Amino acid sequence: MLFTLLSAVFGAAAQSAAVIYLRNPSFEEKEFTHPKSVATAVDWVDCGGENETPPDIQPGLHDVSNLPSDGDSYISMVIRKSGTYEALAQPLPQPLLLGTSYLWFVDLCTSDAMTSPTSLSHGKRVPFDAPAKFYVWGGNTACEKAELLDSTDWVKNTNWKRHTFTLNPRKNSYQYLRIEICTAVNGRPTANGNVLVDNVTPLFPLTDGSSDSLLTADFLKEWFNPRLLSEHWKGGPGSGSLHLADGLTFSKNDKSIKSSGTASLEALVKKLNKFSHLKVEIGAHTAANVDNATEVSAHRAQLVANWLIKKGIDPQRITHKGYGKTMLFLYDEKARGEEARNCVVVRVE
Image (cartoon, rainbow, N blue to C red; front, side):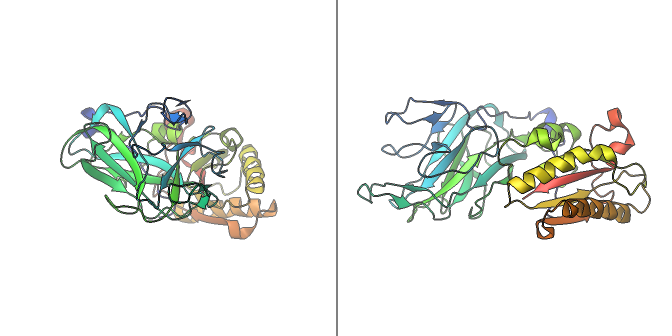
């Protein structure tokens, strides 16, 4: 489902498995301690080849110009025709526990403009445009690859996309998390390629290994930034991200847009005009006590889509769907009442 909401439900398993917070998750902090005097990400251990440079802090190097999905910087990781590839690791403040599943979110894309000299190109800049896969490993020493925990398919999207990983250690508990890009597990690349990485979240323990539960309010607020859209978007918004259209809510069985919601819609129009490659899904949700919830929410989603089209947004960039009470979208219900569940969420892609 395009609009799947994922949760970290902190129940029985969470009593023994804590949320694991990674340091420098958006690669904002850098240092120049590498022997080749290149910038490296603070708190991340370089696990690449001995004579190779580490992942670069971007944007601005090797013709990479993608805007960050979060903050001011991100990293580019490469595979090389020479058979080498880049990898990073980080010691964890709490271990990934054996038998516990964790949800983890990472923004990934690729640059179709990257060029760089290589050991095989004799100083000539060559394209790094081959696709690669992103791998997540657990280990108990820096850079160890003890167990493959999850991976992606080929990363070919040039706009940021949020990837969801389910990490479930089955062999041991692990003190280190390692990330790398390659073409196969323990493979040797035969082409030059890249993957860009940004906006790494903490690792959230799940009660039962399932990612089908409802998204909790606290998790939504902290990690999907359900704020006024004009406050959230700084530069290029990340693909795959969710945004609560703050103020755009509906009273029970009310099928009209409240005037209080226009600020977030105006902000959305402004950003869609600025970033013409973006598309959105308008998803409407209702509270449990709304009659004919699917029909009501579908009509509300259509109202918002029509509003955007009237403002000049191409209909081909908009999809809309009513989710009724199937997700019972939670957003500070105690503070804002049942109306808080009658909301609209915008998914950027």
